Length: 257
Image 1 (cartoon, rainbow, N blue to C red):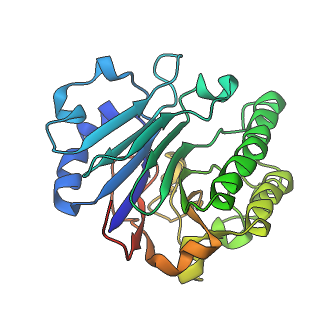
Image 2 (image 1 turned 180 degrees about the horizontal axis):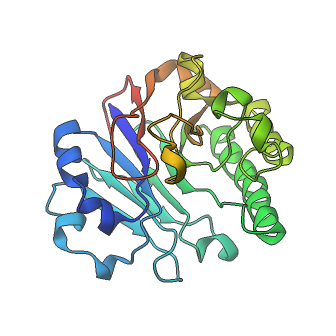
């Protein structure tokens, strides 16, 4: 079973750039998208149902901002919008779907670059999420956390680490939050399989960064430690265009949704 995650930077925009054709060609079991920037009532049936997937949307209260959606070939057992924490749920950042052998968290983590208020909001989001997913694992569930984490964890995860040590997205205090996830038993699936440098999932639109591969790896699939044996592969799909991010994916052994 193949699961994709992709920050599409506007679902209506990427629809015009071949998003639905990409889904048809790739034929994934589940697709998690972030930064949809739309409410469901603004979308046509081409995005919501005509493709044959069950779709679930969690939109921000603020128009044209944030938002996540999950496309699933089979109907999930259960769907939850948000974490149950108003200050995060109002921004449409989390969709949780329950499948045969795992819970899937589709998350658009906050960006902390605007100011200290947003940086603290981002750090607080990491702090609030971790005990929630740890509790799910402790209760016997396998958990996949997919999405745009908005932090490059290690120097290998961005092209210019020395230049960005004070930039939100690579600040030590942000990277320490990802350390806490790893210390709590969470595995970065891509790094589990691939130690190569210069593999990125986001590039600024400026300065021809994508053409020169001056990028950051900030889109991840993390899974609980005992579930990593069920993951066959993890990949970054740098050649897929349409957004400032590219899709990332995992393949898992259990093909039951």
